[in-house]
Image 1 (cartoon, rainbow, N blue to C red):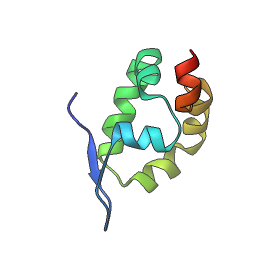
Image 2: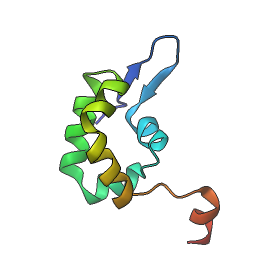
Image 3: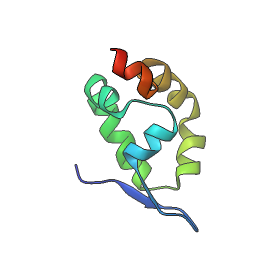
Image 4: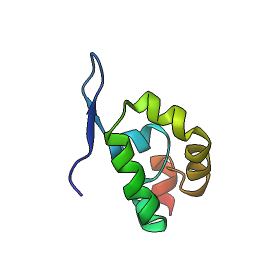
Length: 79
């Protein structure tokens, strides 16, 4: 799928992968571990403001973050 981007008022565009990184979610691991949900959430993300998406999916985002945490660079290098 192409670059998923939304525009924030007064800010640069924010794509799906950047949003996941802001939420401390490893996009690659999430895409591989739950591809159906990943694609569906990306589609929904494109249709609403990131704040609205977060409000609608807050509990699911927290669950996804626990399942696919984005590790700090220092921890990724040790793996």
